[in-house]
Amino acid sequence: MADTEKPLLIKRYASRRLYNTETSDYVTLEDIAGFIRDGRDVQIVDLKSGDDLTRQYLLQIVAEHESRGESVLPINVLTDLVRSYTTQATSSVPQFLAASFEMFRESQSKWAETVNANPMMPKIPGFEAMQAQQEAFLKAMTGNMGKQWSGPEAEGETPGKGEEEDLDAIKKQLAELQSKLSKMNK
Image: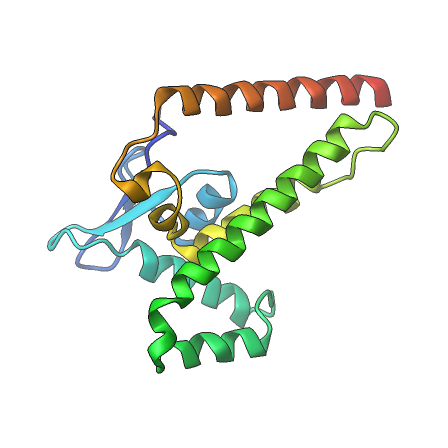
């Protein structure tokens, strides 16, 4: 059974093929996007050099979705991102983006808790899929950079087991609430 707590390791061979080390098969960018939408972190490394290519491939996934007309980023945001690479402000842009996405994620979680806690409010069809898609987008855009500027990792500490247990308890409670809501709607 795969350990979903650590990132799924994908190796890129010299032929540029991507190899899933857990299932021992080749994967596509769309497969990787699917893993991320399902809540799994991935790490893509070059087999020969050992270089971490994760950011490059996540950006490629976003670019492919944008090129297919699945536009998420407005032109002015893309323009500002390009501009930030050519100015002195480059050092603050990643921090700003990470903080903005973290605030967005928190407000989304609070809204979801409100929706799930109110038995009178009907469950929104497709909400979980939308939430997973937004989380994948955030991960793709930040390349998990948010972890660099917040939380215990930023101070060189590792997260405590208590934090992981708290998160697991919250997930369990949320699943129980969703189950109760489903039974009430039947």
